[in-house]
Amino acid sequence: MNMENDNLFIMDHPLIQHKLTLLRYKNTGSKEFRELVSEITMLMCYEATRDLPLKEVEIETPVAIAKSNVISGRKLAFVPILRAGIGMVDGVTKLVPAAKIGHVGLYRDPLSLEPVEYYSKLPSDINEREVIVLDPMLATGGTAIDAISIIKREKPKCIKFMCIIAAPEGMKELIKCHPDVQIYCASLDKCLNENGYIVPGLGDAGDRIFGTK
Image 1 (tube, rainbow, N blue to C red):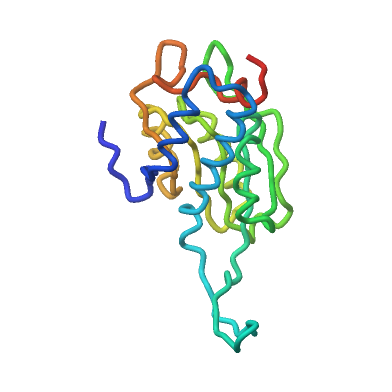
Image 2 (cartoon, rainbow, N blue to C red):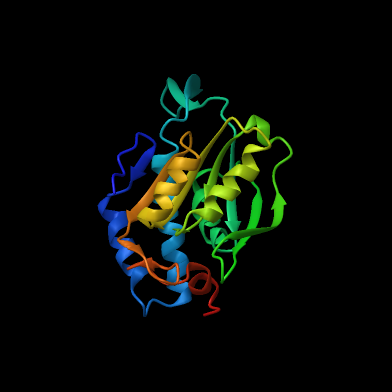
């Protein structure tokens, strides 16, 4: 399956890959799992915000007057897809504490595997913001596709999608349905199994984050 796309970024940084291995391990407990999700997300957010514009300001250091850079006029919003996306919020807000947070609630019907919307609450000024949608897993792609479609109705400046693990089937669908969305992913795994789980994956991210498995 050809995944060459200018808007797809697979994160191969050694720190991300090391932490991802620990995340996959079946005996990793919920506390450590949550910490790893947050750490991986923070490292990925560093790359996803690389294009933020800068402006030069003049400040006074203890030694002299200096010209230095600050982020210029770019407002961000993070939108986790409930419930597993909540596990990624801590990591991104450590880097961008001033960002606003929205929420989109979707669940996957266990029979049809289709996403069902049950909640949506976005910042009132989302049309003035760049949005990064958060979900640890991209399986069939339906949930991410629908969440991005919901957010697009509010006309944000742009949308990016950030996941930790993706299946090629879901990635292909997401790229097809939203070719304008930049996608940041730590691993593109082998496939989906007959139950719609990513292989080798890491199981159900929500259950492992919240200890409900």
